[in-house]
Image: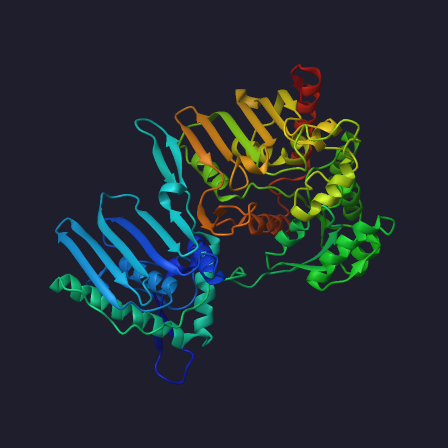
Length: 609
């Protein structure tokens, strides 16, 4: 727990308590599911927390303001157990009317079990132990409702490290920027005089329950408190980064017909402000309609002239996401006006355009970023394990990248005599459900559309260039791909500088194949060990009655990829440094994909040009 001293009143300074565990992304997601009613009435809250037997205080580093720690033995209960009591009351939304607790303790530690009953039949079980040996701990939270359930469990959020003996598990941590920002936001709110009374009342309720728990442990008899409803603070939404930005960047969404999520992702960072949406006047009506929708959602103008919009609105950054064939052209035109560029993938559909883009970016001196997934928490953790020498130097990297999305009717469903599916028309219609990743006139398969993501991981983890590839591909699942001669499944062997080898399995494998969007894993073999990493971790499982078939059952948490990409871009501008995936790196990935597709056509290994 964190004690915050509030000094902005005429009275004596007030002290309020903040539980940082409330702001963990997994706990926020579960609270939001409870608030939405998707889980129904809460019936059971189950918490496990096991810690090593060491003196322990809770704090969040890097926060501003007067922050003090609540000691480990506050009120004779561990601070961690107080946090779990607070979390339980926060999720239950009411005070218990029955309390039972038992404990075993000696010089080696304590094991505590708290059993709560609530008006209406809800209940909670909290077990705590500090008998683990020195090292990592374990936490689990399950909320069982009348129509659904949510699960957060460290057991499900572990990656594997092989470095001698039995495999070791490394937690996919969910703390970091978002957690610190949420706690800091709460502190700032309290110091501004907001919700102080509510925060004080919530802590008083925790103290009441803790006292009853201590009494039950001492006497062996159940206790109770007044079953009064407590005022609870809501789940945190729309977190902002703490601190005052040095400079803000005026942004234009230069066409948003393919993915408006790129522009929306950039806008998660407070230094970027969308001031205009722009496109060429001659584009079709459906393009204008989508652009206008984005402009309306941000309450900014839509200008049907790209150059005029960039000049008149004093734009610093162009966010480019049109049909794939127009990516390079719009990016080059923005760079020619001295505007930095963030571009959607793929880089292009033509070699000559890639060359033109690199030349334009380097000649103008602006920064370029290809939107990617390199800041996914599990990918960053893999990079950090390698950098720390956990497995020695990488020798082989194996990437599985399966998107469990449908792309229209399954292969074999087109009746004899029916015309082939038109690629562009099909993807325009597919925009409704988000399966329009390959939008463009020229048909594109999964290697071209999604290959940037795993190949970006490969580049990040090894720092090496791909020199030769061998690939196989098939139109295995979807009629649209089969009709247009492009792959929805592919396998690639890659040879890199320095003798590193890699493989890639990639596919759009259909929604029925996975309940949560697909399986994405990284297997890294090093000179001294190996890593097995699930890209989706950390995650929370959410299941409820009437759940839409396409809604993910496992929800990613602690994913700051959009914010961190924008932060990386801002730092590149500030320091005249490089972005995590600049124009030359993007060109190299495009060349790797092109070589793989050539290998698929010829059946032979192909050098990457």
